[in-house]
Image (tube, rainbow, N blue to C red; front, top):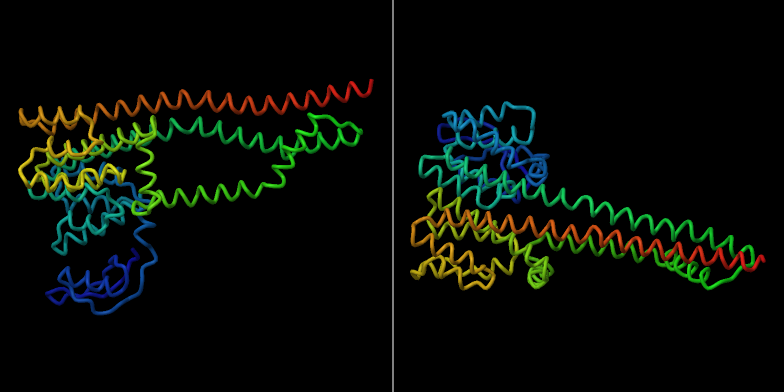
Length: 396
């Protein structure tokens, strides 16, 4: 959403300037009125959009800086003021200043966070609201910080583990393209100039000619991949829905996706329960952090089942994607009154399994890429060697 700048007046008649997000100028004016302020004059549209700010903003770093201040018994208003004065990170400083301004207008931190949904994960505002209602914002946000840092660490592990095989695959493809597009044509022309014709030379010329004639196909494939990636990033697109359903049926990748979503669901529910959030609100917020639409739809009726008096384990059992181990551990937690602890253990288990599966996948992928590239290069080298042998036989 873009930012709009207004001159506003509060109930006491004090005039000030305010930056506010909105779909358009009219929507921004309505938001100002809902805050109990009166828009007097429109001063123009801000140059910074929330999506651009979100690209520079790190919710993990923001929470990591805020929580120690709250744990030191510093008031929220003063803590946000300290963050706002810190110029090391302009995105965090600017957001802290905006949040502090909202507090001065009498609004709750959770409401201010909800308005900036693109910058914060779905569970953030719910956990903050629970901390506000319980009067334990510092303790609740400390648990939230731990969750965010663990999720960020897991994301960093997946990215770092994928860099090496991705580099090998990219370098190998570029090397093959260079050989077929540059070296082979020169080699073939020199052979043809010497009046030498052989099966190996014909095959090499065919491969090189195909690359030179149909290079545009590569660009089309890249464009299609970019389009697919953009569609996959849109949760509501039909392509994303089809992909989410298909990927779960894929043997190894499906298991990774299931582990990732189930561990995220369990961890979020554990934090919300421990923070004192009502069970219905817990499942509503937790279901939004599930990224796979097929799994999310399978637990869409969870709140209705709970309202009918079913236990959480029985309600989750309606989904075929919830593992039996998770259901059994939740059932034990319901008997002992420690559902949040059991959910934490479930999350730990599936995060550990996901890490092991990723390592196994990469341990298979790396040698597979090397073998395939080696076979391709070896095939080309053998053809060149045979062509050279044919030239030697003719010259004799």
